[in-house]
Amino acid sequence: MPTTLTRPHTSRPAAEAGQASAGRKKRAPGIASIRERLVVTILLLTFFGIGMSGSVAYVLQWGRIQSQAYSQLSRDASDFKELANKNIDPGTGKPFTSVSDLLRGALQSKTLSESGGILGISNGQVAWKANSSVTVRPENDAAFVGLAIEKSKLSNVTTERYTSGSTDYAYLVVPVFWSFTGESGALVRVVDLNIERKALNDTFITYSLVGAGAIAITAMITWLLMARLLQPISWLQRTAEEITEHDLKRRIPVRGNDDLAALTTTVNGMLDRLESTVEAQKSLLDDVGHELRTPMTIVRGHLELMDTTDPKDAEVVRALALEELSRMSNLVNDLILLAQSERSDFVVLQDVDAGRLTDETFEKVRVLGDRHWIMDSLADTSVMMDPQRITQAWLQLAANAVKYSPDGTDIGIGSKLEGDSVRLWVRDHGMGFTEDEKELVLQRFGRSRRAGAKRTDSAGLGLAIVNSIALAHGGRVDIDSVPDLGSTVSLVIPRQPATEPTS
Image 1 (cartoon, rainbow, N blue to C red):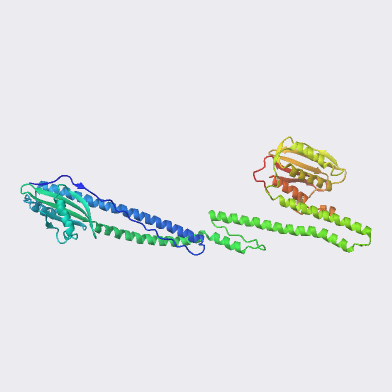
Image 2: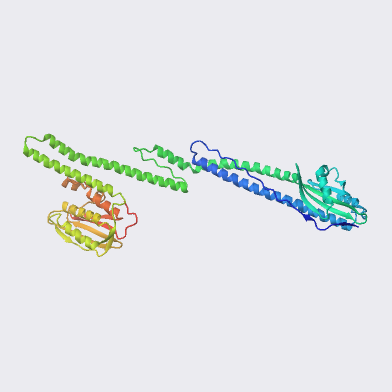
């Protein structure tokens, strides 16, 4: 009665890991465009994703193939043991008479895959081989045959891997011993892993070709898409190149509703502010030139016509020249003050008692002119403000009231709390302002025509300075006026100004 020995002892090799080689990135000469850098970055990420996915899939699939090969060998060992235990030839229905007869029956009943091979070893020799249609011929490898014969002499089933040169087998050796005759042998099953790997390699060559095509298509689509998405940057560059100090009208077309559209809107807003600033500078230069040209022309004309031999004429011209120089000096000082109002440190805020500041200012304005000065009201509150700048603006309003009102008329000053703001005002019974003049007089060199006819020594910067001080505090200037009846000009200052005052 033939017997097979116990449960096989399996020794499986570790799965092979593939190695990825990193290619070098060539640096393009010069500075690459944003589109080139984005496309290259996307392609690298795509290549990495496809390559990493393929590598992981390859390793997992190769491990699964090996696992299936060893599982098949394990099933073959179980089938052979079952055949030996039954001791019935499935072809003839009769008992096996020898180990060689058992091996013959096992080989005849076994259907092999393309990568499968089989041998029957009896008494230390190859007794049976697969038919000629089987591709894998382990009997042609003498070294493997010798190894299988050695394993057939062991008392346990062997499941291992054999590699030699181009040969890579997962193999099984199931020893068998015939107790009646003392005959021994073994069934040898192999799975050619090279054939299994070739099929896997063919699959992943196709995967690589498809991946390369996907990368090429991604490159083309990304290049076209980046060209469309980054078009506003090209427009921005072109517009910036075309803008000059003489032409600030160009703007970038805004298309879409994305981050680049928001950037384009921001840049257009910056260009608007830049154009306004340049126009304001040009206007300022024109106005300053006009304002300075008049006193210089006056001084020059009088000096040219002055009789140097006449002391009285020289004294008159000297007084006139000093007066015009004083006016030019005041103009320069006012312009410097307006320029300083654009700086963040123009005002130094501190907690100020509005009532006390009103009292102090009232005492100062009473000497400005022969008027009937009246204290209208006092605000009983504290305000965050720069007391020096506010006093400066308040005195300017009082000086204007004196300048444009008749002698002996009433001028009132006062302060009161209005919600979250405090109102500081000066009221008079002077010439007043029309509706068109209210905005004009708050601008640099903005003067009422009636005031200009009446006071030729004014440069039109007083209320502009007052307005700059109010804006620096986050406040405003209000003008309530009726022509020829009088005006009330007020500073409206928030009690707690915003972090960044309006300038």
